[in-house]
Length: 202
Image (cartoon, rainbow, N blue to C red; front, side, top):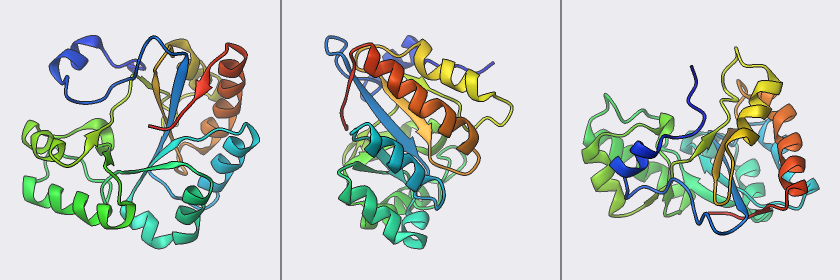
C-alpha cells in the first residue's frame, strides 16, 4: 500500500528536515524530481506557464549535463532549482564519502542550497553532514505518479486527498511518470485554484 502522506511520527523523528511549511497560509509548494528530461520537463513547464505557477525542480546532475537547454529554461521561467544528486543515488547502501561527493558534483551545476535525497533515503550520518550546507526538503504529499500500476485518476486522487495549507507536493518529471503526470497535474492545479490556494517556490 502506498503511503501518500508522510506520517507525523517521521516528522517528529527527523525534525530538522523540511516536510511542509506554515499550516496557517493557504499555499501549496509544487515540486518535481528527476529532470530535466526531454518530452517530459518541457510539457510540465507548459502546464505551469498556462496557470502562471512557479514550482521547485530537484534536478539530477547528469540530466543537467545532457540537457542544458531544458535546465536553462527552468531558470528562465523563474522556477526554483534544487539538488537531487548527480546520479540519483540512494543514500542507503552508499558510503558517506561517495554520497557527499555525488551531491557536491550536482551542486556545481545547480548552485542551490536546496537538497532532496532520491527515494527520500539517507543515512543519519548523511543527513547530519548535508544539513550543514543544505536545506533538506522532504514532502508531506507524494503522488506516486512513478507507479506504473497506478491509474491516472488514482494519481490525481493522491495529489488532492491529503493536500492542505503549506503542503509540499511531489511529482516527477521523468518518463515513467508521464501518463499519470500529464493527467493529474493540470486537474490538481485547477482543483487547488478553485479551492483558493496560491503556489510558491521553496
